[in-house]
Image (cartoon, rainbow, N blue to C red; front, side):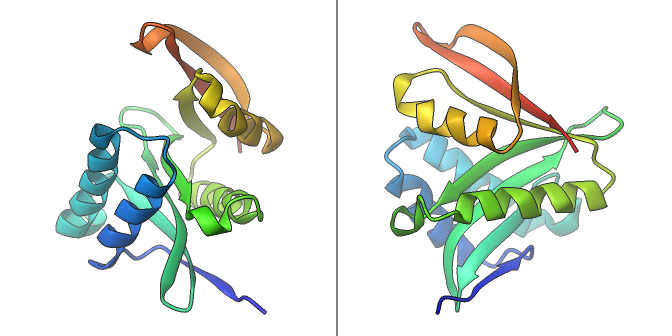
Length: 160
C-alpha cells in the first residue's frame, strides 16, 4: 500500500525533484522549467518572506508532485496557483486532485477566498483545462494570442 504524505516546508533537495517533475511533463519550455526552479530558489533563500508557498506530495522521501501558490499582492484575499505538477508515473491516479484540494485548504486557512490558475489554450493543454473544470474552476478570462500567435491564455478561478 502506498502512503502519500504532504508537507509545506521546502528542502534544498526539492529543487532537483521540481526540475525532474516539470521536465518530465513534456509541456513546458526551457524558460518555464527555469522559472519553476527560480520560484523554489526564492522560497529557499527568503523563507517565509518569499511570496511563493509550496505543498509537496511524497512517498517516503520521494517527491511525487507539488504545487506552488501565493497571495496576489494588493488584493484582499486572492491567490495565484503558479504551478501544479505530478511525476509522470503518478499522473492519472488522483494525486493532482489531492494536491489541489490540500492547496485550496491551505489558501482558505491563510484567509484566501479566491484562487486563480492559468493555462494555455493549445490543444495539448485540453487535459489541464478539463482538470481545472472538474475541480470546480471556471474559465473567467481568455487572453487571445497571449503566449504567442494561436496560443492564448485561459484564466480559471474558484471561489473558496
